[in-house]
Amino acid sequence: MSDLKIIHNPRCSKSRQTLQLLQEKGFEPEIVEYLKTPLTATQLSTIVEQLGFSSARQLLRKSEEAYKAKELKNEDLSEEVLITAMLEEPKLIERPIVLFKGKARIGRPPESVLDIL
Image: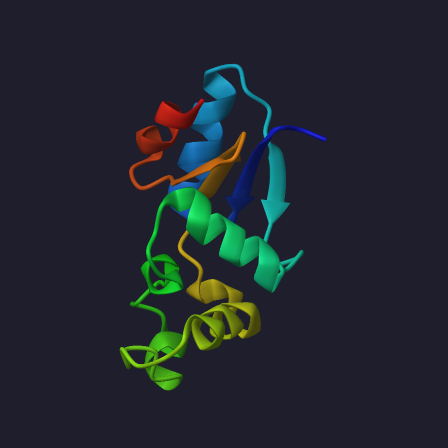
């Protein structure tokens, strides 16, 4: 098992670019296709912490239809509700996320992940 992981969606151009960048730099990350292998609530909470986010809300893709359908804009929603929404609708999770030795970065832009390697 690798210390380096990428939470990846192969249909996402930023995700593909980030994976390619890592490979060009000589890294072979463990690829976690989160739409096929869903993350757990614990994993999502840990990722939020590793990203240095104050809330799971910062990990949400606000442009997704599910964001509007689930009324996730409501600021009164608990962390548990936000995490549960991402578990039910994994497309809501911002991507790609690179994890390395207790740190995480979102690959937007892809180069932003390099500072944790």
